[in-house]
Image (cartoon, rainbow, N blue to C red; front, side, top):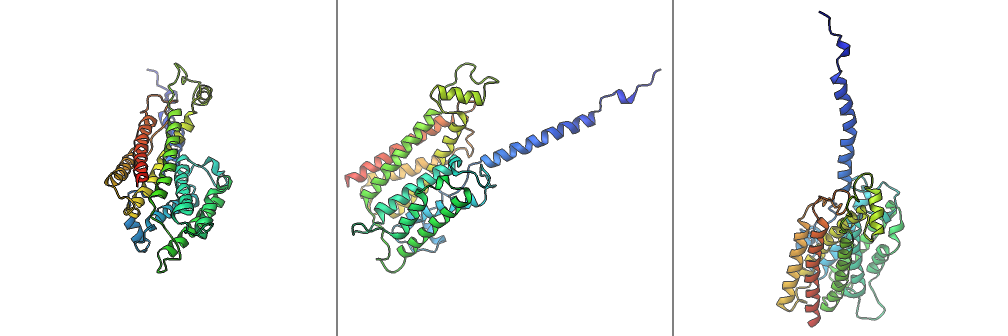
Length: 336
């Protein structure tokens, strides 16, 4: 009987080692991509304004909760850039014009409210006079921050937060003339109009990423690069930009939720009608419902995995409901 040559048998051990060696880097890459692409938690919108004020050891001065909501958001953005490996898409030195969508949305909401603080809520009665710290913070955030390297952006954020803290110090001290905050229903309505415009724009961006694919458009080798080019030619967004629109919307609405809770605390006396209070509660409830959705929406609403849930469609519907509540509140405030 002829003996079997053991060397002729396939070496399963070597094959298994080779497969593991090939699969391990892929697994690590997938984990890293998930970590870098996870939704940040720059602000805690579920924290009530009163708890925030106690944490910062400030008295319950009108306007303090609104100011703190901006401070927390800006400090969160600064901390985000201080640790770029903690979920940030880009290494140090990358341009902020490629800032992840969530962060861009949060920054947009913070800039808008800070500008409203400077121009309306905190402007003294005297003409051509404004709070120096709010003016400096607004200039830092509204300037050309988007073109600065990450470390420069971090410095800008921290300087803006320091100016806001100085304003908060003066607002909450014993001298009422050191800083001002006016509980003006008209000023709040003006800001809510800005919010409504932002929500309309976000809805448009989400809708632009929901164009149905043509038959065979996302079959290999057409995705994802060729598919993005085809989507642009048809007037839609590339699938990666559509994914960014999802994060931008969630970032904006998360920061807006913290602001609306602060308004509920600060502007209680300005909300004279029960309907206005109900509209504000409705806006907060809709914002909370949106934030309770999936932490990573797995966008790709168009390519290349067309069978994934239509998160953009659901998010657009949620944004529309929020916009309706904000618009109703604005109209109620205009009635006086």
